[in-house]
Length: 141
Image (cartoon, rainbow, N blue to C red):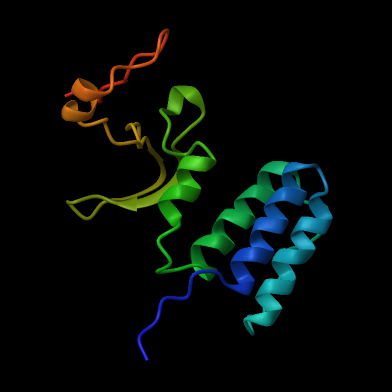
C-alpha cells in the first residue's frame, strides 16, 4: 500500500490560482485558494480585494501547507525568486526568528542567497564543450 501521489487536486487548483493571480485576476485566484481550503475542511478563508503581493503571499502559504511532504517547496521558492539575494528582490523580510541564544527577533530578514542549480559535472564539460557563445556557470566556493 505504499505509493507516491504524483499530482493532487490541491496542487492542480493552486497552480490554476497562481496563474490567475499572476495574470491580475486576483479575486478569482483567491477564490480557488479558498475552495482548496474548504475541500480540505479548513475553516479559514482569505478576504477578497487583496493586493497582488498579499495574494501571492496567501498562495505561498497555502502551497506550503497543502503540499507538505510533496517535495515542491524548494522549487516554489526558486520559481518565485525567494532564493535570490535580497538585493535582487529575494529573501524574506519581517520574519520572526529565534536565535541560538533564545532571543526572539520579530523583524528579521532571511537572505538565502545561494545558487539553486547544480554545477555541470566536469567530466560532462570535458566530453561536451559548451555551445558557441555559452559558458557553464560554476557555483562560487
